[in-house]
Amino acid sequence: MTAVRIHRCFTRISVFVLGLALSESASAQSTLEQGQAAYERRDFRAANEILSALATENNAEAQYLVGEMYRNGEGFNRDPATAAEWYGKAAKQGHAEAQRSLGVLYENGDGVPQSYEEAAKWYLLAARNGNLLAQYSIGLMYRKGQGVEADAKKAAHWLSAVAEKGFAVAQINLAFMYLSGEGVPADPTRAAELFREAADRDHPVAQNNLGLLYRDGIGVPPDATLAIKYFLLAATQGLANAQLNLARMFETGRGATQSALAAGRWYLKAALQGEIEAQYRIGIMYRDGLGMPQDLDKAEMWLKRAAVNGHKEAASALDKL
Image (cartoon, rainbow, N blue to C red; front, top):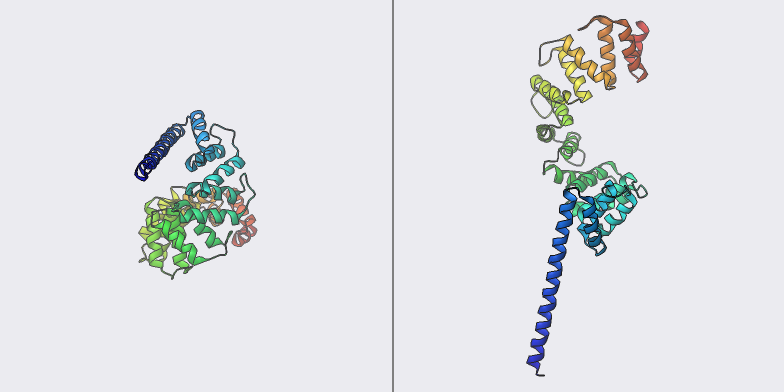
């Protein structure tokens, strides 16, 4: 056999092997898509059959989805320990969502021994692979010093990456950092911008804090009317501190017509949620008949609650009741 014929023979064999590999890869991809489709339509029996077979063949996406089914009890009894095993197999192949999910299990001690260090390790890997939720989680861990040495600059770096994508809770955390100069230069104007971006996404904590900035003129010109607007948005979503802040505005007549009735209504809502200052204020209003009929029994009840919760003025008012 001549050298040319040998070369042609090897070339044909190589082409055949490559074609076979591509065919097998296409087949595996098609099967994976069938498993994903079964999972998305919540046909967990079919999903389990298809994905488990692929997972044992080391398909990272299948391993991740099998982990999801075990973690969530989808088609199986919930088994976070087995979920962790499958997440781990996919995570070691660089699957970002599996890395993040494994981090969540370690952070919460769910199916694995609780470990902030292990959680931070997997969050960081997933964050570097572009997973937004992991970037947020590792940002928080750097800010709190959980599982890693506290590092405000690294916290700001990761939170900024997520905030730029419109993630409201990251925008809020970063806004607080700009207010205090934590890991970034103090910049109340930037803080207000971030709170506004999150407030526009209807996040009540951002709305409440933006209201405080408008009330006090921090990072924005003082504007009591806008303060009330944002307090009201957050208060109607049930945020107790916003209800307290709104009640104070109505009680003092800042940004709106003074109204003891409106103040009392919002103080009561906040008090019922355990807001201590609101418990004190509604107690005083019942005592003095402000915005509501005088009721010394209710006054005593609310002042006692506030006093038990450590409000010194409530304790003093109670002694004089």
